[in-house]
Image (cartoon, rainbow, N blue to C red; front, side, top):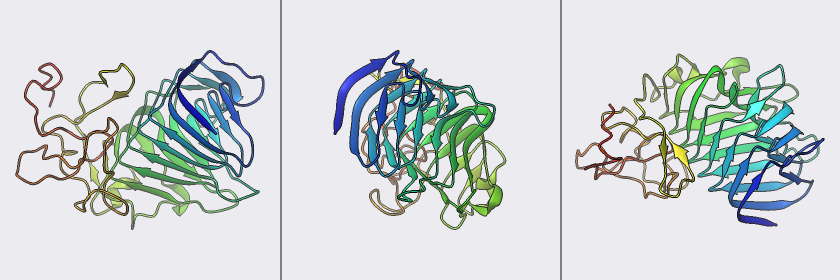
Length: 290
């Protein structure tokens, strides 16, 4: 099943999935769909039942709300989110008040969230909250959840894995409790906050020096790019882009990685969702922040 190239606004459900409810055992592709102001008990925009496989690509989730779980998305399945913007979603529960909730699949045991080349910012309190579910984050930027967490993974029945690589965390906390974070593989990240990422040998705990919020030429995605002198630039894993431990082959906007953003003659990927172009003359209308 495929949802392609449209907008869903102001949908409402008295149960789950204000815009789309995905039942068990489905294979679903969501490509370039805008979800806005949808409401539900769980999964303000999307509710994904156990034993499904879902891919969300080049989409936007903004202003959705849930009463209990997942202001934007609730998933109990294997879910991959790529090149997507998730912001200003609201959760009315009294717990982590997350935009994305990942729950335990007691049927097929395939509950997992993978976030690639995406920007998640300015949600209610927490960006991603997972219980008994693995979370993998690659080349993404998570920002401005300073009342809660950028990502929090907690065990209950199982001990899930939190694996973060080549990503940027700005003004959020990162949950490190219960020993679920594998610092042996979590590296080449940067966080503005004192967090578990500071324990990894290639992780940096400092201001990533991101610019103000940008909007792409199609008025579709919102994102933060690194400033010219940001420690994010040309500092991701040195391996060539592609599958494995290196960075993603393209950034959130489809810009090819790697660019020589610091002009040292060596092209290397940037950390986070956005790659700084090597040609920065008149970039973003004279924006020279940082």
